[in-house]
Length: 371
Image (cartoon, rainbow, N blue to C red; front, side):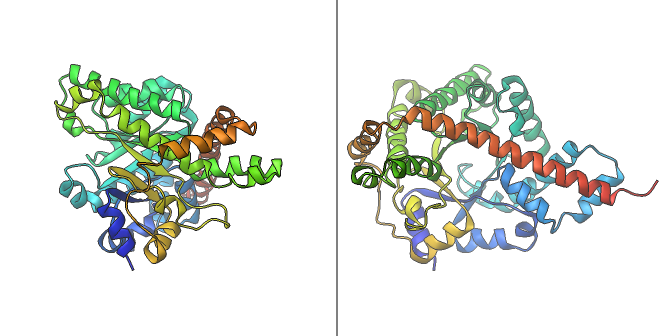
């Protein structure tokens, strides 16, 4: 059942689960996925927590206690989410130890309402790292313009970071620059660079969803032939950029001091168009030293019928560039699409967070002890 997942791991792709809930932790399901499905990490986001906590299972006692203490809804959310991340980190700790800190990690995101506030993002990242208090945590910071200096600052303090919501190649290069700047700050502060890790979450399926919609609107055979090409081309060119940056003299100087490469992480790898094979963004994005964070449905599909045939990224750069150029020639603006996707991504996470606040507030009121 998991031969494809084993092959994927052997090709240098770390398999992370893009989901977390208290039920998954307490039922033993997460431990089972680690033992049987080669899962070596977990990512969370506001939408995942909104779904988990609103589902309710496993949270009643903690919510009752929080209601009795009359905590604010914001504090309640932080207590609940950091508890789940802490417990998941403990389950993954053996993987963390076995891989010298590269895997076995759990990501938790700063409050999405702070996405455009650098100072508040840094403060929140420090607070989350302190609250979870596990070495195998990654603090997620969005790759907004305000997020870039926050990434450098947080890395510079020795806190490991998962940079999220990356859609464009230009922004990805800025993210890698922020990581290197952060490592240089950490070095100046006398920190051990070998203890700092980072991944850069490059979003995949949403690029196809938006560009395919625009290709369909054109309605030509030429446009139709480019459906389903943009997301893979974009991600493959991101890997090319990764290879360039992490072979530069600037990087090599840091590597000599024990620094770790910031791995590309393929996010949003669940296929949204039923016309495409459900393992598309796994099978066709195999490259060394990457992470693929999958929803459980994609993990199961890959285990069942994934076709892992070796490296499917290196050697494709010329074709990938030609495909993006062909899309641009049809009048579809790459810059407009990636900015739209970033804006929508921030809005979606903020909306999920607001929904979570509302539903949690209702639960706190319901469970509050009578005066």
